[in-house]
Length: 214
Image (tube, rainbow, N blue to C red; front, side, top):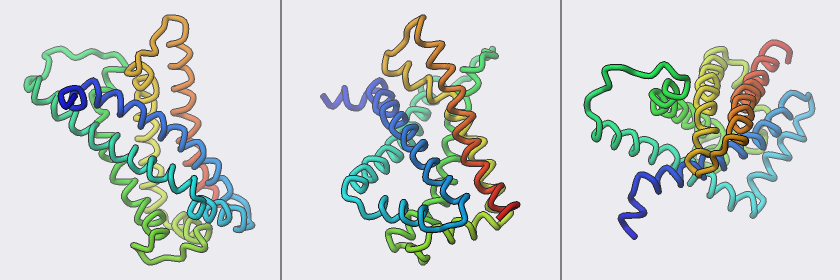
């Protein structure tokens, strides 16, 4: 059992499940973030308060945080294992799109992880009371941050990297789960491509609109 739980196959399987959970969460997060574009702060603050106080949401929050940690930590572990198992690089590398994303997946993940820590410092840790801030008015906190050019640049660059990460991760998760089929795999890849463009673009539009038009 210990050998099974510690195997690379098991790690990849758990990473895939955690990754798909995060992919679903991003859709919910994006929907709530669009409330920042309206002038009335009540809807966004109400949604943030609901997410912070609802018992069911709190349970999913723990699962989500566990998913983030498992996805990132095991991703690093698997990459290190791959490096150790193959210390010499191949003389010839594939020019395929999948190989490119696979090759740089770990670096994209680390950059996204750094951004997540910054994001948690500004919002999640404030909600927990670990960092000073107005946890009753996240609408104002978000709008204030999106008036800072440096923060916006970091935000946009991070979501650009996230787009590349999601493009590979989406189809890779289904492949890891063994959901490959000549008929359905192209559809999954198409959905993954659309998702990896639309979702990061949606997140990116919000700070741009706030900075220039609010």
